[in-house]
Image 1: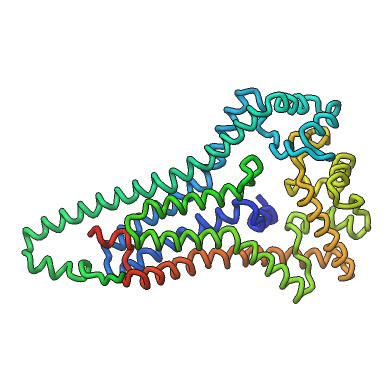
Image 2 (image 1 turned 180 degrees about the vertical axis):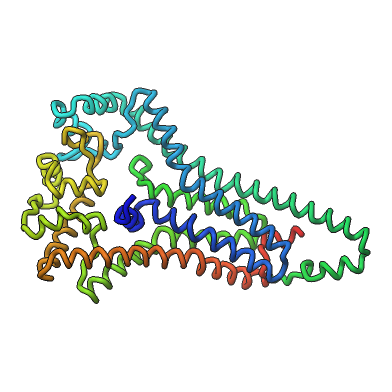
Length: 416
């Protein structure tokens, strides 16, 4: 993978790649270290237990969170295929319009893509069965990971902690028999005196929306399985912060960085790095040869993509994952085209062309835009990771101190 592809993946806040980097590469490592440090202020024994719990919790959850949906969906697709359906057929095509839809695509692609139309026709003839299978796929790919992350993993983790604490108590009792009661009480006095105070369209949901739904289910599961009231409150605080910082904050940061870059440096960074680094794109702008559809209506965008598959804009749209073509340059009639997103992409390209022409040097403007975009993406990843890995845990520990009067993990401190 090239640097440009990496930047493109990290800069796409509608995909799981930024989540993967923040979650596994930065956030988990920092949280584990901070958990030990915070608990060790009052008890090294509790710190060891809390840190082990955090390692299992963070990395076990990450494995299910990031891999659960794709794995279960792959298995579900195989099951759907065995039922005679082509699972890649988009359920969004069931919402018929004049430009695209199940009936419209069957009619318009009958001669151009007979194999794919046959698959569409089979779905049309068995629509209720296909809908049921897709709903089942959605339920399985979300409910199973939620159950594993929110209920099973925490309970197993807590069970292991109880086992470790029981072993430690037995070890202490054995030590008591040898060193005497007074010495034992003196050696454990600090640890034993903590201070106490008191509607979703499931057929058309995106991958990122599924991840958000998983986090919502995970939050409910973690709060419900928490071991006491203090731990429930702290878990609710933590999960609310994680949802905000994972799904809302990065997009706000991206919008803010792009706006500042445009306002201060007069550089347009709205486009993906792949587009900014596309030599043919820059050349076509210089030669003023880019062809756009007449307008951004659904019908006109579909007409443009169908009639001009080799046009630069069609190829860019394909590269951005907004349209799929078969081997013979026929648009795949099984896939839905989100013409709203395509129109937004075309508008961003028009704005970039306008700004680059004003600059007087298209190539230099594109290079500056690429560098600025790379800086914005890396800054976004770094800032959102800092908020997740450092700021949120510190706020969580502050919340714990205020609500419990202790630095110790509220789920462990009373078990010692």
